[in-house]
Amino acid sequence: MTQQTSRPWYRAAAGVLPRSVRRRLLCLGRDLASIRARLKPGAKPAPWSSLHDVGGGEFHTVGRVILSHLINEAGLTRDDHVLDIGCGTGRVAFALADYLSPKGCYTGFDVAPSGLAWMIRHLPPAAAPFRIVRADVFNTEYRQKTASRAEAYRFPVSDGSVDVAFATSVFTHLLPADAENYIAEIGRSLRPGGRAYVTAFLMTEARRAPATSGQAFVKFHRFGDVAHVGDTKVPEAMIAFDETVFMGWVARAGLDLVPPVKYGHWSGEAPVPGQDFQDVLVLRKPA
Image (cartoon, rainbow, N blue to C red; front, side, top):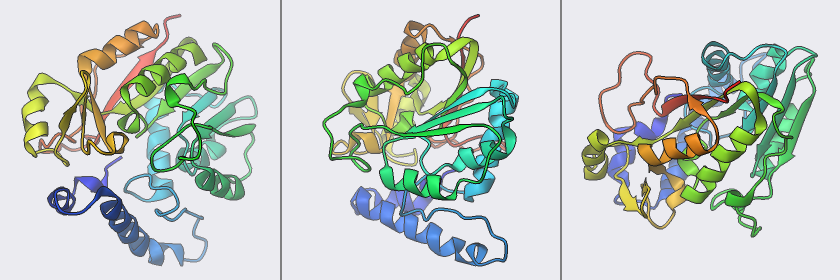
């Protein structure tokens, strides 16, 4: 899940260009770079980045990589009920359509109606039933015409019905109250023994100085008592949580951490082979 926002030019432009402009430039660059691949005979459909930005990497390749993480780290099997938290345009859903058996089940939700419409139109036939839900939740970039807040949102699944839940690049865009609720909802949704694969930016004491001095991919600023943000005017654009606070939410949700946390290189340290950009946590609901 390498992200192109870690590029030096993006960090340099952070103090000059508004984030909305930087984001458009990122999307334009990705779309231009993908044209040749899109024109190849037999190429699979992939959404334009401007439709719903999901970070760098080829759409289907990244989806398959995340699927492999769900299998190897979260114990996903073909017969499981999977909950895709913030499914976007279906990057992982495409891979799951080939993977899940008729006994399996997929539920995905997102706030961006345009991305969901593209996903529904292009998702290939699957043996498992797929349920795709538009979440009526306010989001600064994707869903402004609603007063509903993520801190009160209830996931569209019943209690204890999910085998594996996952949220990639979701908690990096949630305000503290929203993130706490989403962790609680993961705890409510998982069956005993179920697992969740979650990515986030976790702020530790060792990371605080480099992240706030500009060595991270963006310069982080203190935001309230529990978070740091890249843009105080649009805090949901990029947010890191104090690790102790985040793990407190996990404990209150009745979840255990399957150690260790796999720390990413978002805070500016030199990446090592196989290291993700964001921090990765696997959470488990005790049996």
